[in-house]
Image (tube, rainbow over all chains, first blue to last red; front, side, top):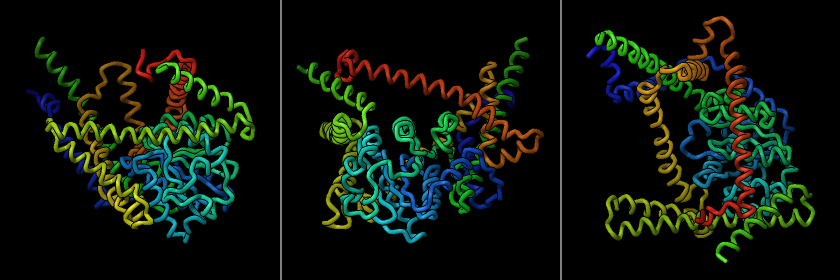
Length: 278
Length: 219
């Protein structure tokens, strides 16, 4: 068996070990990496900057806990950006599995940094089933769809919601999603009510949403952990996404290296075999 | 009756929601439409309840009959009820109930459910690396184009890779963003989105008109 044949049949556990090392090392020796800002992230930042101070905005937690590493840094940065502008933040989720809990925890954590008070500066509407009806119904009346917040407090008892009836009072929607709910925010809310929507999504979903950015239906886009890192830099508050860039860089480079080695082995091994036959 | 009533409900609900799109929210059509949307969220809630009942019946039956893997099914049932029961009890009884920060549900979600789901998803990195090494081959012209594009996009999406690409002349990262992501990718994605939307519209029309009845378990 030639060297290349051995490489082709390498035990996959060696690959797993290499990935583990590539993930772990950067957390001990953090490299200082220059992170460039993509036009889509800059557009999103500029659109949020253009939202008038003290406006009411939505931050939507449409992601599952499985993608927390990519999506939560986006949510944290978005909240910091809105709180800094003294915006009133309404959070909700179309994901039954943990969305409202993540919104509750993250929003309250970041609110402490800016002395924001629940019910006056931010409200968590929680989850309601059937997101198409939820998105569409809030166009007429938010209270008819969400009579109470995530904790069961009637919206009529929350001072912030006194002046918020429907989308007419909402200046911006920051959608953070790892699934197709982002499509419906475009087709139902942006298309029918004209609310500007910015989207943060996982790296695997991001290519699809370039089409919405190109059509002006999303005012900007954050793709994966890199997008989250870009937004952290834009708001001047580095967090877990910037920290994660080292591990992601090394793993990407490792995968590229493995693809090259795999292809070299495939072609050189095949050439060797055809030589033996002749 | 079993067929006629669901078809009639689907027809009325579908027509009202389509027609209401062309009317102002303040009109009676808009009012009916809003009422329908509230009903949809209520019906959606019952479908979740139906799912919970179904998963309980299936797993409990397997536990009772001691089918293969029954301890896992028992664990599933325990997990469901340990999370669900405290979360539906009112938090006025105790701060441990409900879904607020500090409740039993929140603790289980934050420290068990969430890390376990993130871990499961993270293991993909290992499988992707292994699969890329074994299966990602430049066997044909098409697969070579895919391989080269994937490689340069992967490089571009991380700081180390971008620094490497910037060592070459001609702003490669900007070129990739303009011509690959906002060019070829955008065009293809737009085609897929429009195609899927047309398919969804035609399927919706078939359901509203009662042509498509597979949702009732009929062909």
